[in-house]
Image 1 (tube, rainbow, N blue to C red):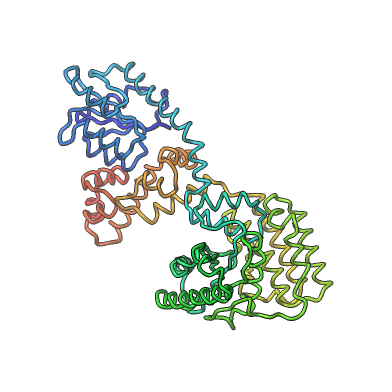
Image 2 (cartoon, one colour):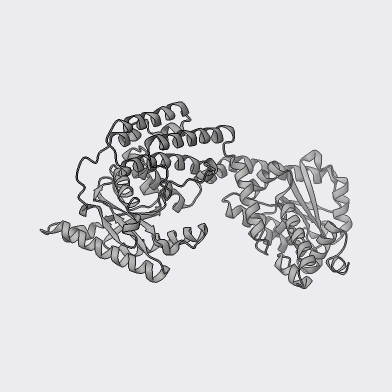
Length: 546
């Protein structure tokens, strides 16, 4: 799927090449023509061109300047020069600009085909080397925030990772935590004052809360925050080594640590209230050893926070201050975390074994004395595994549970273990059906991302390269994927969307044609008019006058 651009101010040259060269036989699928360097740049903005053949002597901008511009903006494009015998001095400059080849006029078709074929082979060699790298970079993502959040989720949810694996990831993601150090988990929940916001705005607020926490705790603590799996923000905090050295020999180490933590938490709440105009509730677990004890701390925090959300709204809870009487341990919850864990069974598609584990948990629970909080803990643990797996596959729980049940807010299931078991087994079946029948296709996901970007932004910056940067792929690799998946080149799709939007604006708005031209990212009104006429048979002015 090679696309080539021919540039010459003498249009008969490009037309002759376009008609006489057997493009399909040498692997070229699209041939574009431009009569000036400016028109060539416009085409390059819209199409995923692989090879450019340009004349040297052209008015306004010559071919050498065009090649230099293209090399700077689209370094993957192979550029070739056309020139007469008398222009040999230009060859030196062409070599300096790393032009792929230098073709003399009049063009010999056989020599021209050989030169283009060589350029195509060069491109294919480059693509074969970059394909695996691009796929790896896409899978890895390239966003530390995402990678850090994924690691935090794994730790919170009890996924078994060796100390070496955790230590390697901490160093790789530049997280200042050490194996075995004392840490505290701070769970933050937005109050009712944020209820009027949509999902996107809530996500921004949670992101801002994490940033505020990082700033407030800096100095005496190092932190790591992310959106936790259960509708709250998790902030992991540990004392900085310098601060530890200052207070570790004091007789009141634990008191000074507690006072410092409480002071920072209160400042944290005040800053959120002042900057975000809303209140938060904050729960602090007891100190634990990182990372081995973080899942237990997280579960303890959720059990204390969620059932008492209304009482704790806008306040601060220190778990070390709470004295719970009686036997609070429940073997049923421990069964969920006994290897193989429910998450492991779901990841490895062991659906029958996963159902057996769920039934075993509830059978044990029904034989024991349990509280509403214990049952809620079991429900959260199972839901947590379902959410982890569905989110990992790019789906929301709502897609698996059309009834709309939300275990974080709707406690209607908590009347008996039987009802929770029935719901859990039903969702397990839905999850198996969804993931078994239609596992998320990475390429289809990329196409959806491209369509979302183009649908929300058709301005001057919208180009194949811009979109490729947004989805973390090489422009050539993205173009190949898009053409293979849709049958249409990405450049053609962008133009089609621009023309459809132009059609709509001309018909349904009072905007002037030059305003529409600029809004759609076209700098040259004549070129916009040419493209519009190509699609609809009339110029924009003629269309509006109809």
